[in-house]
Length: 78
Image 1 (cartoon, rainbow, N blue to C red):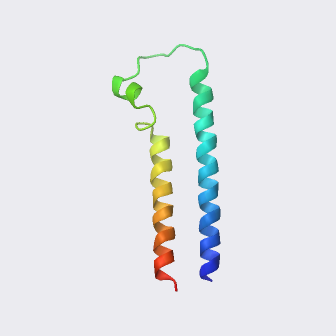
Image 2 (image 1 turned 180 degrees about the horizontal axis):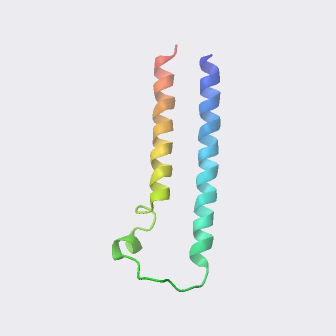
């Protein structure tokens, strides 16, 4: 049964990576469009647009948690 856990964890990790690539692509597409902003963007957000974006933070935390879980399963199943 532990082989199924490893396969499922790999599939989940693959889905997360593909979703992250599509999210980044959508963010680039939106940022390249010409347009006006309603309000000024904070300076810290302008300097670190990816680090202060909550969507990317969720992706980073989710990927880290899944990698940690895969490692945990790898060490605890014989």
